[in-house]
Length: 535
Image 1 (cartoon, rainbow, N blue to C red):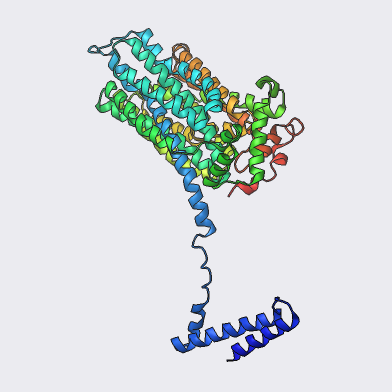
Image 2 (cartoon, rainbow, N blue to C red; image 1 turned 180 degrees about the vertical axis):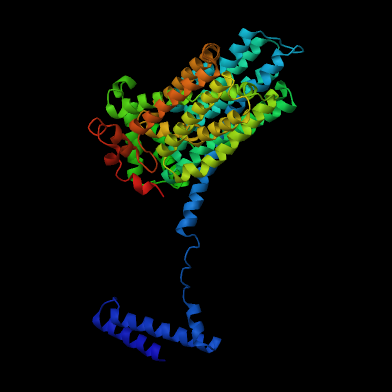
């Protein structure tokens, strides 16, 4: 009744004033009275006053996803993408180790494809030529077809065709062709996926994800060594050929690089990809991508860009770092591991020696993962280079004493230090050097200059591989190891004075190190925030 009286009196007032506009105070009173009536009815029906709130809209429950959970979910996309793209590195490892079971079987008396010494050298080095070509093609292909797209179009198919040629080889020409294509795949994999990882990962997890590529490569090496102990080289080639199929499937479902999308004007796809990866997708982030792309594609030539100190210095330093990578003699010593065992006075089957080396390499790769996450990149390279130099020096001294008949009773010493040498190499050079070089190269020319740096690495590899046996013949084991120890020590000095720290650093901060006005200053002044990066 009260409510009806109020409504009647209110309506009378409206008509008296000659307007249809309700009085605001009366409307508020009506709402308050209606709310009071609803609450009273609720109390009567439910018996308890505390149930009144159930008739009102329940408060929004807070999201169960804490910032840490959201961050983890976003990181999952990055992790899965890196794992998928890293499967190609498993094929890399297999291609690098394939000569271990291949050559002894081809050189045996019952080989279906007999070869001579010269053909053996060509088979051993053919992948270096293919890798150089793959690196040069990779830069152009990644800009034209995208990082993910170029891997699907060129990289994995090259492996598939290469291993098919090896599996069904009828003459040494088939083997040459297969090794050449597998080498092409190596060069492509070492060029494009690393750039892809840098472009899709957050700086805080980039280090540990970047190490995964090396881990997959070492797993591929070990699996090939083990397989060579049980099956022949044709079956290994067929296995790798089949492995290419799921690799293509996994890579098909990963996102393309947002940098590539920005380069072809697909900002919506770039934004969606950044959001899916949990990266900054704000307008400023898209603008930054465009600035990077404009810098890359508006340059008339790479030579014009290389006139800038912030460009040519990291480019030249990358080439020099890869030179010292080869100076560690890692590819050579792994390939000739059996000779080290024999020269030490230990008789061992070649495949078994390779398996032992493969196990040590994988163990080193596993330990390198937490190290890459917690320690600065430059620090790891310094420890790695110094440890390699000392280990090679000890091996040189041992073989010198052995030649002088003063170390005949300690055959296990070189094996111990050879294992230590492998572990030190995997700690830095073998795990983060590829990622490190991708980080120091300017983003505007990274997709072009990084493959060029990788190509130079394979040129160095070709030269070192063809000079190794000549050095052994003229300098013996002691002199050869001494030379590599000296070169590795020079590389240690180079890393200490000429390379920046890149962990948790933006591209702009890294570029400042190479700027002409800053480059000559002490590194401690340039990197005043580096101490914050060390836990």
